[in-house]
Length: 223
Image (cartoon, rainbow, N blue to C red; front, side, top):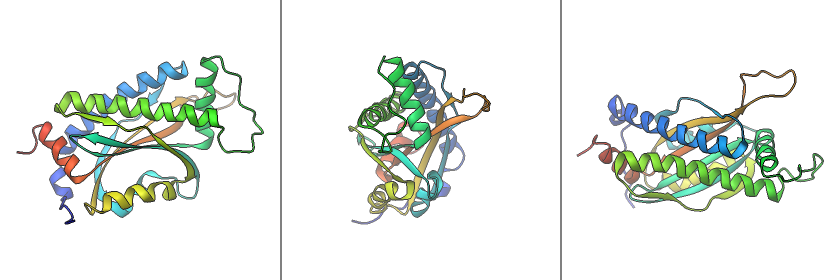
């Protein structure tokens, strides 16, 4: 297969502005959906959209050397790609605990020998699915393209290890990746904590070169 040539300069100006605006709408949808799940307001960052060398993806979105939980979804339809939700283990425990509490489930034992219990992993799987669906609905409405996520695959490991398979797959088609990244989280409420801080998770949209071309065409930015 011949690699696609994706020039980062082609994404300057209007292209990146349009992709950030899609990110804003998708992040807003995702924050509202996540707020309903946890029963508290959820904060979000202004999404970033940038083109990077494919090998830089793990460094751009991962906490180097720190284990994280990740939900990986494939995007199928008119604009294929990948979506990844990455969250630190402490934040994952806190977020899943809040969701389980809102459902009336008993708290998970603090001395559990595993990083995340089966119940916590199941909740994270649903969080990843809700976030991906929220984002793709916004993207579909703005472009007229049909896109939907596959069921999430879950993993707990160092971020670079979890991302390596995704990066290798995208690298078959292109040397350059488009990253759309937003951070979502619940404000800290522990005693003595900083009320403005976020137990943050990062949500990454990584379209293939073909998927990106279709998105740009749907936004009226490519013939």
